[in-house]
Amino acid sequence: MQFTLSRTRFDSPVAQLLCAEIQQEYVRRYGGGDETQLGEDDFHPPNGDFIVAFDESGEPAGCGGWRSHEEDAEMKRVYVRESARRQGLASLIVAAVEASAAAAGRKRVILETGPRQPEAVAMYGVLGYAPVTPFGFYACTDGSIHLGKELRSERE
Image 1: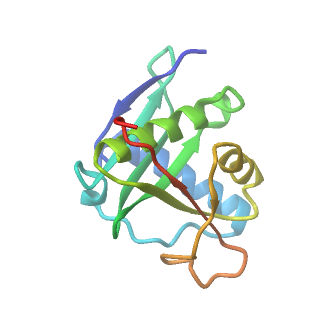
Image 2: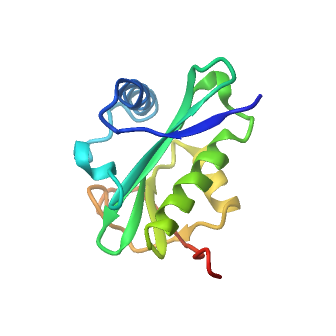
């Protein structure tokens, strides 16, 4: 299946629909949603970006974005709908998020995930993410996994 990635406003209906689905996934896996505070402006260039993937029929299939966290880009809301999983879409979304962050001058991407998302943990490992110092809302939460990856600029 082919996917089209499109920069999308975080407050758009399609982005909010996918984010609501992500929250339901967290409820299913953890018993509650992600309580990290996100603002509508967090994902606006040049201090952030949000990307939605659409399938061949134009239906939203997944999303992901980044926002500023000090000097880093914090990746948030990487999600692929069940119907589009196991086709490499999550890796495509992560690559697009990384490229956007690098283009904005960020040197590193960081993220938080959890042990009940083994698919995500495995994917990030394959993509070169490694443990970093805990940060953010879940910095002191047992089991929270904090990962990061140095980005290459287009000049390298």
